[in-house]
Image 1 (cartoon, one colour):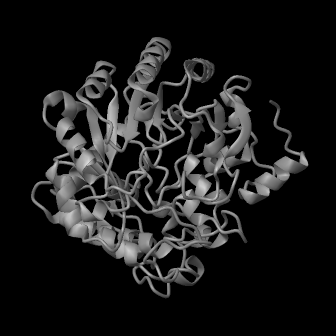
Image 2: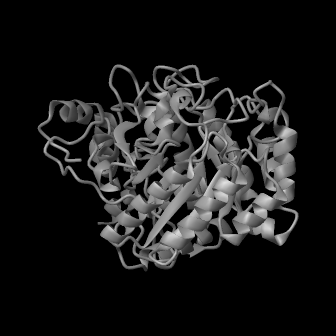
Amino acid sequence: MEIDGTDTAYRGAAARWGLLQGGPQVGMPLSTFVIKMSSRCNLDCDYCYVYHSKDDSWKRQPKAISTVIIDSTLERIEEHVRAHALPSVSLVLHGGEPLLAGLDVIEYLLKRATELLGDVCFLELSMQSNGTLLSKEAIDLFAKYDAAIGISIDGYEDANRHRVFRDGRPSFRETHQAIQLLTSDDTGRRVLSGLLAVVDPRTDPLAVFDYLASHKPRSLDFLLPYATHDAYPKGKVSFNDTTYGDWLVAVFDRWFLSSTQSFRIKYFDNIIALLLGGKSETECLGHPPVNIVTIETNGDIEALDSLKVAYDGVTKLNLNVQTDSLDDAIGHPAILSRMQGTDTLAAECRRCPLVDVCGGGYLPHRFSTRQGFLNPSVFCHDIAKVVLHVRQALLQSVSGGQIDTPESSARSQ
Amino acid sequence: MLTVKESSDVLAPVMPGLEGGVLVSLSANAAVSHPIVTRVMNRMRNMSSRQPSYYNNGDPNAKASCSSSSGW
């Protein structure tokens, strides 16, 4: 598919996404592929961006990915890897709940991906799951293909109350058991990549941290809930309110000041790296080129699926792995805009010194019906609170030397 | 260097500490003893020592580019 920069539809989309007029119309190659194994979920979490947002396109998707779509997807990825001599790619099996696709389909993907891509690049295979359907057989399967499993859980039993089965039953017990299964032997521990929690400021942050840390995972991560300027997150009363930032600061202190920091917290690790002038490894912070696409169960190539919180059809690129190449996707404004760094941010973000660390915040959090994505994150003040707190802790953790903040460097010149 | 007035229509009124930017640089003789900071710095060194090729620096063992918020 040819992208025509003078096309009216393209220009309209470009304006919505804040794409630079006259900027490059072909982005960098893609390297992370979120593959929807199942369009359905056995849980009904009240904050889910798939099933509780303005986009209901999941209803029109096949329930599970087929082997035909898996083959087309992997062939497109192989084509992309070879065309751009990519050194590595990451395949994230996702849903809904990916285990609903069945272990036979999951094994088919892991096996075919290894056959097609294993010799041409470094292949990173992972799955994000709610854990409720996890079995020893599944763990062994992932171990066989050196693939990782991340488990979503929000903390102790009451903190996990948003995550319920479709009949309303709590899912905590099943997910807790899945983590216990994963951490019961070396194979499971090797497969478990980390625990992922959504922040709810009405929970006790220290109790949430202590619960998650008790499993001794390799990694933890915290996600701010899906929200936009049209729909504030629960518990946040104004733009200036820092309820979520305060919660994260409490967790940070518990982790940073404890004596046994054997695991990383991805969100905080990336803030520290960015404060020290490094790069972000996550799309939520900094401004790394975000070269991620989602493959739906029918083979549609779409933009970041969490954007569904913004408006119906937001992720649509009108591309499919059976008819279009992945190169076609990287010219689309929704993808290209995420490769232009700070240039596509709101004016106030471009002027703010925090932008080197926050990167304008996670893209879905910037949306408003009035201004599209040209806003600061709805969590702007929360993120600022966390970043400045982490910076203070960082400064206090260094001794015996001169710490050069930009202002002290300017004074000494 | 951005000034406060220029820099933060949004944040400056409620976020003292933004004056002069946020990044921190360590001098050559700074001693970093905190295990988390040391680990992050080691990770940064590993990333920067690789040959650049697109975002993930050409290292065949590098993590593939930036990760999805729901991946690792």
